[in-house]
Length: 249
Image (cartoon, rainbow, N blue to C red; front, side):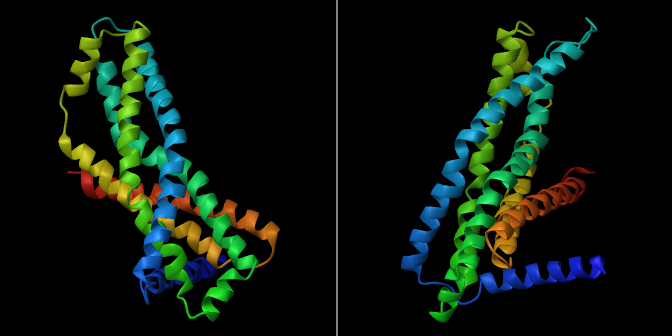
């Protein structure tokens, strides 16, 4: 029975997406909504992303250095391992799962509260397409999310350089050699393709859980938790699929 329920929820999600792009709100109004969402979802996340990226990059460099016990293994591998792990997985995927908690919970609780307080019903009565009004600005705002991930990549590698050089694990030249050795530009492209897909999921899945929730204030909290779980699951699944499609030869 639960399988049928999951399938119906997935169907409902795709029907919601179709409705989001129907009957758009006036551009003058939409412009303000988009700017507000950029401020809330993208700008509001820069601090936590910068903090986590810097220190995790440092940890990756230290962990790699401590595992290179064989004196024959070149020190530049510290830079190489930091670059690969930060660009390929850490910045796009790990940060997106953290954002599913921060941005996702915010979206679900804000839309869920509107549902509970009957503001969504009021929008419908006024003839506004409430899904377009509420969800579309979030999707547009989250299309700036790759810039957040670009910052995360830079700070992750910078944190690795600080930890590697000032921790005495490698010289600055060795670390930079590691950053440059066997660099494949497509890996950055791959990371950004993933990021755009994750951004879409981060905007729509929490919106779905907030929009279709029933009940009162307690259920808003439950919906936030559920949206975090399902957004994380979707991100990990899409990550697996895209890695198979884009990287496997």
